[in-house]
Length: 304
Image 1 (tube, helix red, strand yellow):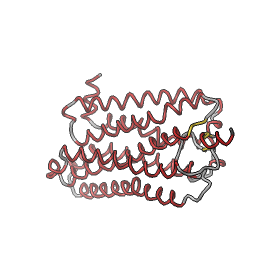
Image 2 (cartoon, helix red, strand yellow; image 1 turned 90 degrees about the horizontal axis):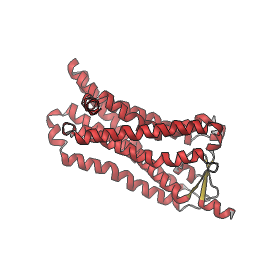
Image 3 (tube, rainbow, N blue to C red; image 1 turned 60 degrees about the vertical axis):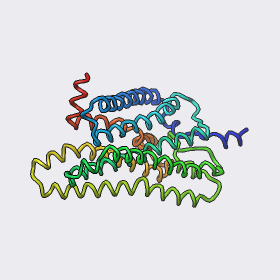
Image 4 (tube, rainbow, N blue to C red; image 1 turned 180 degrees about the vertical axis):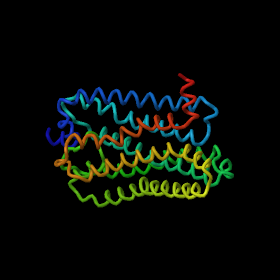
């Protein structure tokens, strides 16, 4: 019976560190989940209903909101249940499903931000070619690529992890993570490490460097332009920059936490840092775009 439980279930160990604060954490996280769902649905409704917002930049913002709904819905319900539960077991199928949803959300977030950087690059550096390059067909293809590439690449990586024989079942997090599962393996994981590194380069570092490259080009153009032009560029690019910075900091927190020894880390800090990249970007993105972009802000105020 113990061997069966060990092979079929994982146990989250970090919920024990929350203790009596779990009821406060539950209320706060439930309100945050409701807020995230409401604000992102509001963004999608406003952008889809207003024909003046049927432009590439706003379509990509709607894609971010759809991705936020996907990631939040894949994380919060299970997490809220675990906060109120005395046992924190999760089956292997459920664990790998959670890994797939959270990681595909994270990867898609970065690919959409990369496409948005390309859109801003064309608008600022090649304005005369914008309407010929950013056609509806191009927008549809880029959007499909932003979803399909993370979906298939992560599926291949998880297939390798799911077949590993495991010698333990304790995950030192509050949700399932691929690296934490791989560390429980009884066999050599060199292949998993290589595939994981390639996937990290393809889904994180390449988009990251591309976004930095596009913004260096935009900054170089603005440096030689008038103050009025700089103001317009800042107005259209600032929300994307803020979203990118928020996501980068959140992703760095998760990566840094996964590579450290959680046994010697302050438990409250460990729990908070492990939640940052799943919780913060979906909640803040609608505020960033809704408050900073005049067209969206105008239609939201009119809606209310």
